[in-house]
Picture 1 (cartoon, rainbow, N blue to C red):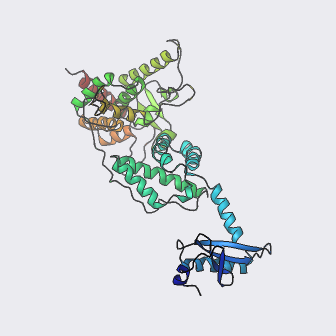
Picture 2: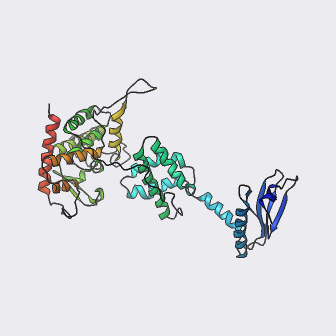
Picture 3: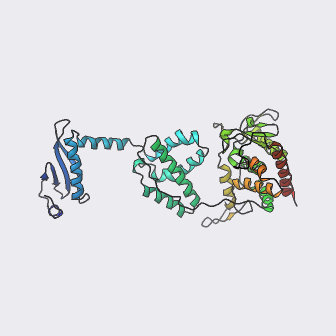
Length: 414
């Protein structure tokens, strides 16, 4: 019987030495002193003699080598060739998807078809996942790999992005498990790496005035500037405003179809004169860029993607990225430690904070909570459990007209 002491004392002799313990199990001592556990057997499938490598000593212990041997021995007794199994496992590993191919599969077959945040998912995966894991087999990614990656994102000062990355990676691996591409996910038991921050930012009246005035001098496309203003005016979600289409507008009303709302319910929004003016500016901008006649009717997205090959609105996160860049716009010079300028002139906020600002203003001018919820498409159990499309229509119109007058008074104040 082998012992660790016996194996350690085995010395090379200038030729291969195969020393057996029992029933084909043994250790090979090579001329360079390397020691390899093996199992020699007769294949129950081909009836040929086989040599199965079990591992190199001391990388694999004697106890583990005996365990691998016992498993292989039982396979032979059952009529199964363990070497064939090993070859099949190698082939399956060779064919196993890389993380890069899994990312492509997830985006094409799931995110782009079912997720409103598909562009953000793609951005996150391309920024942090592909560079770190792209060439690795998806089956090789372990829990510790995910935790290490999230820690790196937190350490670079982006805790919220770390949370978003975990959500996307978890969804991608769950998708792979559901489609039987992978046997399991490495994200089980991993908590969000950073605490969730409550979003309660609402701009003051002086901040609204500054934002509206300074927006013109910001380094932001005209389309995004108009979209940001329209979010504040209509009190709707940034993604819903950015995805606005002429087919959704009839006169003074904008009807959001269920596939474009968070609660999957058709939503009716009154368009004030201010809102209609912004929409008209956006359409005139499109006509100018596309060399259309001024009196020619336009049909399509109000904020279309600048790439003519893509029939879709601008990216949902375009407004957030654009406005965030202008909070710290680099100034020329001082390349070693570049100075920055806050072109917006107020503390940081997000496009969604503009919606919250407007809703806060609605409460400030005496609009009831029920009507606020109807405007924001936020029915509350026990208050507006169910309301039909035209319920609160007059109240919504009156409330948005009142908010428009208040907003104009704020931005026009001396």
